[in-house]
Structure formats: C-alpha cells, structure tokens
Image 1 (cartoon, rainbow, N blue to C red):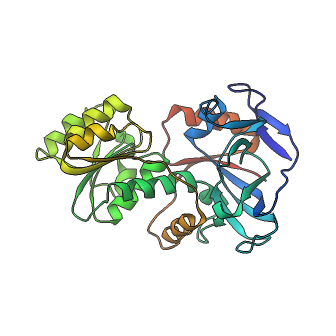
Image 2: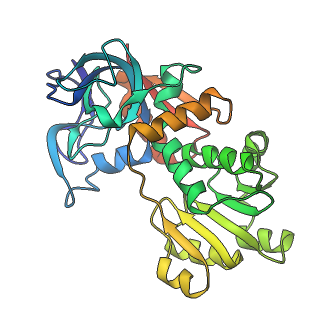
Length: 314
C-alpha cells in the first residue's frame, strides 16, 4: 500500500510502499479515504512520545481517519464490510497510522461516520471534535454564562465555540481580525484579536466583574495563569494542552481540568448525531493529496489554520 512514513524520529517523511496491515480478532481493516492532520501528528513524528510509548518503524503518522471497512476480524458484530466509518485510531504501539491507504484498528474505537458529510469532513472530526466535547463538558458550560475561548479558529477551538454557544453561553473568542466573521458565524458574541490586543486587558475592560469560565487550547502554563485571573471564584477552566495549574487554581476556588481525550465508539456516535442534527458544522481549511503530506504537516506547524487540514487518499 502507499503510505507516508519516516525511518527515524524527526527524519524525512516521504511516500513509501509498505505492507497492508494485518488485523486480528476484534479489529477492522479500513480503506482510508481521508486522514485528518493534527498538531499532535508532527509532534509524534518528531519523537514527542519517544520515552512514553513504543514505536514501530517505518512510522506512519496520523490518528484521525474516515473510510470504508475492507475486512472485519473475528468477534466483530457491530460493524461490517462496506460500512463507512471514522475514528481517532490511537493504539498502544505508534507507527500504524492513518496517512496510508489502509489502517487497522480495534473495533471499539471505530464508529459509523456522520451521514450528512463526506469522508474529508468526517476525518476532520475525531480528535478536535471529541476534545471540544470534553472541554465544554469540563467547564460545565451553562446558559447565560460568559466564557472565554482562547484559540477559537483552529480545529478544537472552532468546535468548542459552536458547542458553548449552542448551550447558550456568551462566548468571547480570540481570533485574528481577518477571522472575526468566521468565529461570529460559529457563535461567538465577542472577539479579541490576540495579535494586536492583550487578551487579559481586553476581557477585563469589557467585563470588569470577571467571567465564568475559560477554555484554552493554545496557551502555555504562564500565559494561562495570567488568563485565569479573569475567572471569578466558583468559575471553571479547562486546557487541552496540559497548561492548567489544577492545584493552584483550586486554592483560588476555581475548578480546573487538563483534558485528556480518550477514543470510544459511543462518544463518536454522539459526535455524529450532533453533526447530522446541525448542532456542529465542520470547516475545512484545505485539503492535500496523500503524497503532499509533508507539505500539509508544515502548514499545520505554522498554527495559523482556519478549521482543519485533511489528506485525501484515492
């Protein structure tokens, strides 16, 4: 099969001809039609998890995929050959990724894709969509509350903005001026251009009494510590990049969470229902053919993305 892979950490990533994965009991083989490109992908390729998990080389990056089930292993009853599926396909050994024509995965982390979108849009959903669900749940977003979302134009942030607004929250979104119309369309009531304004000063000026919650997908620990001063006692804060000082914020009466998303077909089914009902819309930044994956990863490294980058695999 054709696949994008590397022979060593931080090495050249190139198109290779590799064996099609074998599957065992409880697993499915997916013919990949599209693969989502996430920041985590290039970090893993650079060796970010080298000391934490086993890796297999040549290492195929990628965790998000949408495609068609080619074959099912023994004991798989919920899925069948020909089903259109998607998932966040994180496995105990890293290397059998989604930047390939085929990928194997445990059936319990695979679900039928939303029927109202294509493979490209479905592949843009799992990691950022599930993470956004967790973030919004973590801060227990409520109607009428004011919530700041830092990093609202990326994959996770754009979904979190929609979900929080759908729950009736007053959303303040950070976004470049050129992206203001986009985040307002997603549901933001206010925007802050983080490239020209100080986030904390801008929020404090508009909301001198403080705010109820923060969802942050971009800030480091120091920056998030400063942003957290905007949250009133009894408020909530969640980070998707493990930047929240949970114990320190608890001493101030703020409930904080560092969200660690886990793949599960039941939660993917919930995500599918939200997409099919119109509660959540998918926005693609751009698409690349599989052989252009190195370029797609470089684009993803810049961080200036409106929505999701996706690889199309024919």
